Amino acid sequence: MKRGEIWKINLDPTIGAEIQKSRPAVILSVNSVGVLPLRIIVPLTGWKNHYSNAAWLVHLEPENGNGLRKKSAADTLQIRSISESRFLSCIGEVSGNDLIRIEKAARIVLGL
Image (tube, rainbow, N blue to C red):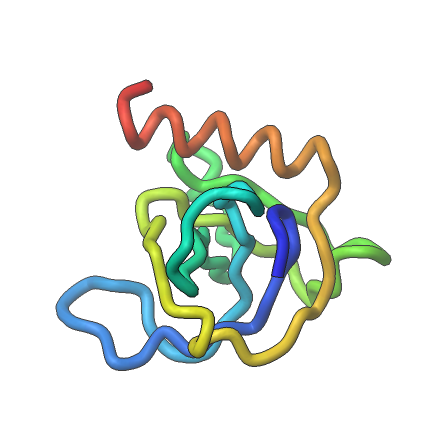
């Protein structure tokens, strides 16, 4: 499990408006940080055209290396730290450019 990889992750159980079910997510945390078996992830959801108005949603196209089957959005408002036991399978990796765009959106959400 390393930064930039896309994994299918089981996010249930959830509460309220938290993004739920098994879905792809991008690992955002730096590989060398932490001693606990946790990773910081950005979950993905299906892309909708009106998402282009939301600075925290990053549009991702299916590409050879990322393993996505449909247009997706990295939802940086739903960033969370999760147990490695929630990780089901690696499906691919985002490009360097896509990772930079996700980082920029995360900075907006975090006010950095």
